[in-house]
Length: 231
Image (cartoon, rainbow, N blue to C red; front, side):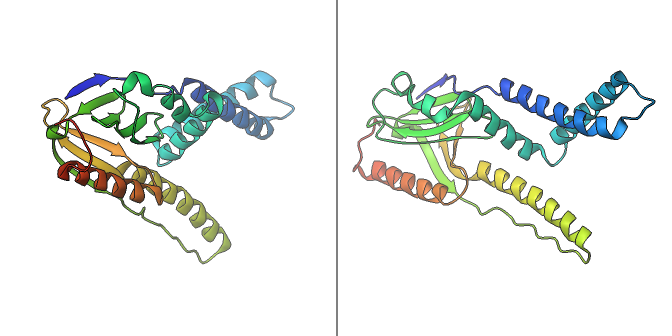
């Protein structure tokens, strides 16, 4: 078993800066129109709007919108930097001993690449800038799980209450979906004191189920000798 650091985090710095600029711009426009009057000058409005932007951005980071905020950051980062999976594929030769035969990879909302790979000799799991290279005898136990996200539905007796409920439900359901996506995947317990559990996050939707079922069959073929793997 070999555990090593890998550089598979695609930075979000430029996305954060872009999001800050968007919030400040929107807050400035909204605040300027609310605050503007013959008695106030541009500097006072500018300070008010800047403060509004900071407050809005801070609230989004500390309240239940944190996961939505993460999705926005991921979206902006991919617009700016391109698809991390394409860049990950270009690194296969440096990461794996042989060309992958079976590989699945997902980029989380934190912009880390998570992957599981079989290259004809070894099994690999990549989790948040750590990679383990495994012989089959290194694996003590494996399991997988796929959940359906919880759904929240709110009803209201007035149009205003109904609209507020729809907004709250949309935010809550998106947060539930993102949380569930981080829990779907394959867990392997290995012979390591420092990193005994490795997890491949399979994401959300129909794909995680078929991905986990595929790797279950791969693992069973390791057991019965149908697929060759270092032991």
